[in-house]
Image (tube, rainbow, N blue to C red; front, side, top):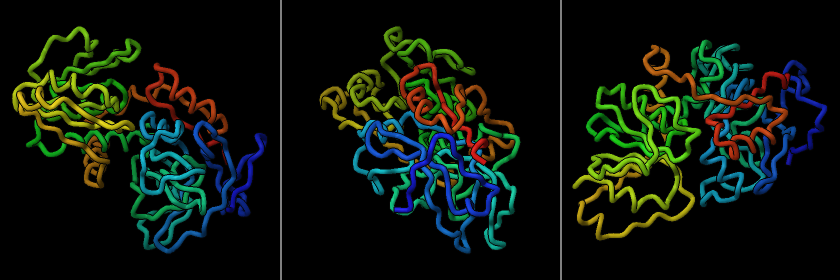
Amino acid sequence: MGVTPLHSHSVVSRRNPVAQRHTLAVVIDAPEQLRLMELELPAPGPDEIVVDIEWSGISTGTERLLWSGRMPSFPGMGYPLVPGYESVGRVAQAAPDTGFAVGDRVFVPGARCFGEVHGLFGGAASRLVVPAARAVRCAASLGEQAVLLALAATARHALGPPSNAPPDLIVGHGVLGRLLARLSLLRGGAPPLVWESNPARRDGAQGYEVVDPAADPRSDYRAIYDVSGDASLLDGLIGRLAPGGEIVLAGFYSEPLSFRFAPAFMREARLRVAAEWREPDLADVRLLVDSGVLSLGGLITHRVEATRAADAYRTAFDDPACLKMVLDWRACS
């Protein structure tokens, strides 16, 4: 399979020509079985670039499902796999027609360059070979914060066009909920209220209020955006809608969603599912970030060297104080 175990005392050297065709990657062999492995890489094609990854983020939504084995059927799903879709690094090799130059800092939303090891989503590795069209040039000044571009684009996609009702209630104050609130405020509407049941996550609001759901008596919300991923909340959220109100499902749900028909019928409730971000969403948030209008600050709370990936994943999934965990790959050189 082009897979060799990596001993704990060894790393892949990016400066060693022999190592140019190898990468150090996070591999989930099976649910709750994770290790670092040295994997072979293919030679880049004329429309591909090679990227030395500096940082990658750990998703507490989709990657938690991959880790736990609860990910629903998904194209490309299977073990062993390399997770991750929030990677940032420097271009190490690029053909002239790709539009990139060696040294450019780029955001990479994953890769499929690991042979028989599945790339779902394939970004948690020290070096990647990716189509140039998949990489997005980003400002060097962003540093590790550039890993958040995927979540910012996800929030932008959930909002949709300005004709959509903006959220007056957001359920969940993780990174996605915070970015959704920030983007909503940029559209000039009234500040949304945010529900968060975990007291450790109620701080960090910027221009909006965060409350315990039990302390909110309102039941006339026009637009509720749920980023919790909790399928059990749907009936309760429908009960909080104003007539003709909308619930936007912006999380990722591993369990089937169902609801009682009568309350939804009486409110003539509408449901909208927000899928993954598209290229225009990423372009929009990149412009907002580069211009200083949208801040990505205060969202990365934990940083760990990539050689300690197993500990990092457990912290990201088990520590409620961890909003965003970032793996630092720069020592793997």
